[in-house]
Image 1: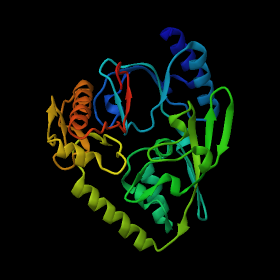
Image 2: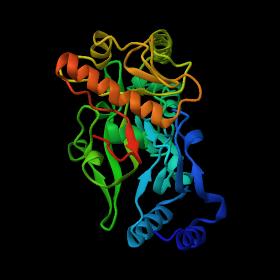
Image 3: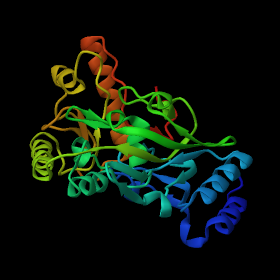
Length: 307
């Protein structure tokens, strides 16, 4: 990857304000840890995004869609690739009766709040999920009995080298923390979401109830990436971690939360290496105790032994 050539060409495509070279990822990720990326780019429309990805492919540069960084850990050694954070038209939302059209960069919490203000029900579960709509599509985000698969009517998806297609929920292949984006290198551009009219006060009461549950049960006062591990079939990661005697276990300033064992938190100054070492320790100990190998729910970038 010729960094100087790419810097020049990215700047020509997007303008200097939308291109950052050798950018530290710690402020851009909810763990508040991690090293640098070669480039952080912010394309604001479909043409810019397509051009950026085509250039990456042509130059053999790895690329990754950042979203809001709420489910990501970048190694301290950094990511020798291109982080792409959608902006501009990708953050737009439009309501048409019970239908919401939203870009992938729209904040899920904001979208849920806007729906509630219009008396639309269906997104209450998303009111405390800190990611982007695109990230929520990619992992079929869910909480408290609801998930994206319940409300998505279709999604606009860019397949590099092929073009843009509108995919149905069946084509999106939703499953538990799974979608087509886990199998194919593609980019969610936005979605059509079908909601329904309800009682505005009841909708907001439910959202407040879920907020109180999160405050009570989750360590929201510390940087984290939410649930660190996927829920194993028929069990819960937090229960298995606690059963293995790992609650409040620390590596450096990274710690298993005492409030919820399914969360790894940054108590202040944790490095990505601390967090990653704790992830590995938890997986080994839980496997030794239960025979179940926990699978990380968060994305790991720049680590050489991610298995």
